[in-house]
Length: 498
Image 1 (cartoon, helix red, strand yellow):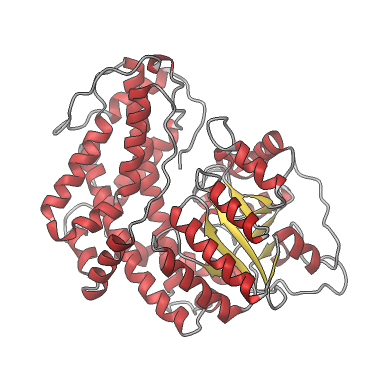
Image 2: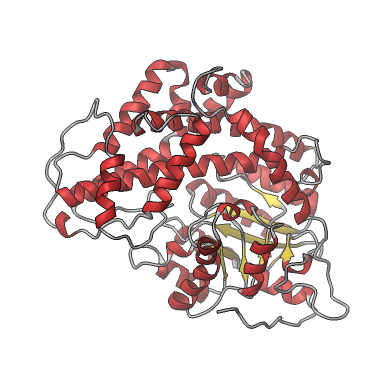
């Protein structure tokens, strides 16, 4: 996901020169940009975010500033392979628990000091996506520089491919794992290069799945647990990010926040007054734990994207309404998907906010937080002509932070979590995603289901689940519908802070 903001030209040259001071081993010259590339609208990258993330990566990895960005990127690619392998190990453990009837609601209620598998998984996701975002932004910086100088070389793709090939040569037995783990950042660089060469804005890349390759890697990881993580982890005294140690360091905070989410249930029906409304208390957060028996809300995060249209087609086919938690950056440009968001509204689905650009909100300064929460709402007003009633924090991070909850409540929104996690951001096997979803649905009997409409596997798996839910005869609702029911037919009212 790109983080977009208007940039000034002058400081950009300095940044581009710094970030482009990297090895060009394996770099191949390319033809000059096609006619029209000189007038191609620049990729608007938040340069401060690039610098901040890159420095954060250095701090994590222990690589000093004297070492080039190419070496840092190579280290980050190894970390991505670790995150993929570790996520696969955790998915296997979580699936065993789901099979036995354990749910997310059970998993988050661990005592302090106890292992919390779900918190580990969420912490891992945040690390993975932050690294992917940083590498993508760095690629965009380099392509911007190529545009500005009408360069005959595009280094980002060549460098990424060279580093990936080197990893495969060093670990031939892990070649398929490496390919799957690095797929997203490599595809992003390829789309940027294609856009540059053809003089057009690059298309968004959707995830792909090859079930046979995915299952091969999973069998390999299951048969030798820990081996793949160790193969790409830094050795003692060596610079780099050790995923196991990272998770151990940060998961306790994540566990505390997740536990607080389910401290009080959103119970139905309200006997007097409104039970769910914008608030910094438990009234301002819903998880699905208090829904009536047999009532389900399908929710989708991170879109809209190219794949969202297929999700909408499936929902229409099964006559189901869902709630879409959108990133405002995905509709804040005619080159993105405002028309898809408009279709969601037209077809009767809820449109809700998932921030502007999917950051870890607790790490932001107050001004940045205002952009991600209040600023995201303004985009809804400008593009769709309405304010969202619900907000979902990226990774669920910050739900117990008073200042963050205040920002959400003052924007007249209720925070919404989930109690069924399909794990579809990592698992690319639609059949396994579907089976995992069904196990949790059967164990809980009511609640909020989490999918991501930016993944191809999620389109397939969620359609399978739609069929199952229709056959079971359960009641499907949007969050607006069920909250109105929880509130005894009443709607909340508040005045948003300008």
